[in-house]
Length: 381
Image (cartoon, rainbow, N blue to C red; front, side):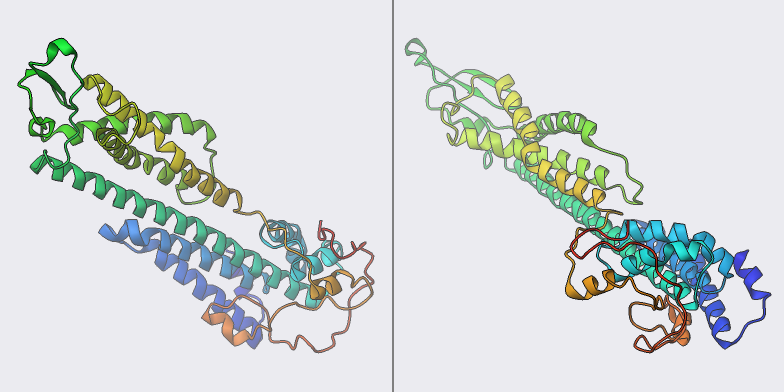
């Protein structure tokens, strides 16, 4: 609706270029939203969603170049809030906009202030796109790791099913002096008593032994997932990163249960070389399944850190160039900071303003009365 209103106003070549660029971004966003992916949705759906929002943000930046000065002044506070969330504290565009924001809101706006707002908003949107891309990348890595671990668990179960003696998890508890004429064999799926002396425990292994141990490990992992829910916070990010982190625990628990019981079977753990009953085998499998939290909690911490960095600028160090901008409290224009934006590139998806020489002198710019903090301290707040 706002774009249609702007189309009714008289326009020159530059304004027409911005109008065409805005309509092009909206058309691409509409096409990405209407695309039907079918079976490709799990892989392509999130990328298309990012394309929709990226084009909408690009159209918003170009539209900022078209609206009246009154509307620009009305949106200045919104732009400043986005800049504070997504640009570093010593970013020159954020610093310069903080110096000019009071004049812009008061209606004392120069042509270069509009350009400054557009460039700062464009940079904030670009950083937001990068933050969301990092969240999506970590989500994809977690789902890939879950698939690979699940494939490994399933492969072990199949191998144990067709060759149970090869990965035997059966134990032969030590017998007393009066029981030398028979032996007991304990497997995850069954217990054997009063077997002849010399019976090899692996010969009594059943195809479902490994599956039984992995199920016990899944139960232990499920308990840790429930316990970790208290640490999970909601997020406005479009990707279910906490869910991907939680799902990874299940196949990891099954795998750690198998490896833990196998280590006990190989007398790797002192004092646990022989388990006395099937219940002990399953209990230790559940314990090892829950112990996967010692490893996956690092993944949880990384996921929470990535989500907490969404919309939070980094504590960058002020360099000499930015310090010079921070110290610029004298009268002068609020010139744009960054590479020039040619109008003919707007239709190709570039966010920015009209072509201008960043080194050229510009007139105007009211007296600056905003106090400026010395270099090395936080500016723009």
